[in-house]
Structure formats: structure tokens, C-alpha cells
Image (cartoon, rainbow, N blue to C red; front, side, top):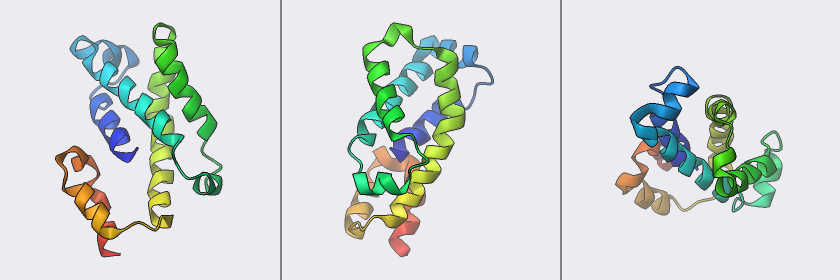
Length: 132
């Protein structure tokens, strides 16, 4: 989820308005971000329920619901709302996910292996977790 968020920030940051974001690069930035938001919604369903319960300030049901809406009502998407989610809600979700990483008992060798993949180059800040 963190990798998706970082990529969305990368794809949406050069734009000052929703119109610029939606129509830039023949909608490439928008479509990439749309797909990543879909992935975030799907992955949110797989997070440990106990862990999500510790972060009740995050609207987990809404995140999963957004995934369903994005997947099943593509033509009905409110661009302004989507842009607001990217700019206002994703930073809050990122902060919560970073706090969650501190609470998860993960195998450091697994994290090291994952972070070696070029796919995860946008979350290399998690390498600090290897040294904790």
C-alpha cells in the first residue's frame, strides 16, 4: 500500500489542478493513479483486523468501498473527489501505515528481500526498519 501511495504522489504531484491531473499525458497519470487506488482498496481488505482496529481513525470500510466504486462505476467517478482523496486522505493513510509497520512483527530478512526489488524503490525509507 505504501508503494502505491508513493507512486500516486509521484504521478499527481506535478499538477496544481484536478483538470491538469486528469487530462495530462493523455490521462496516463490519472489512469495509473486510478489503478493504484484500486490496489490500495483491495489491499486494505487484507490487513489484519486487529491492526486496523488500532487505527480506527482510518475509514477502512470507505477505502474498501472506494475500491468497489472505482472498479464498478468507472464512468461515474467524481474527478474532484478523487483528487481530494489523493491530496488529503492519502497523506493521512500513509502516516497510519508507517505507524503500522512499527507494530508488525515481520521477518527482517523478508523486508530486506522485498526492498531489493526495483518495484519497491519508492519505499526505500523502510530500510531504516532493518536497523531498528
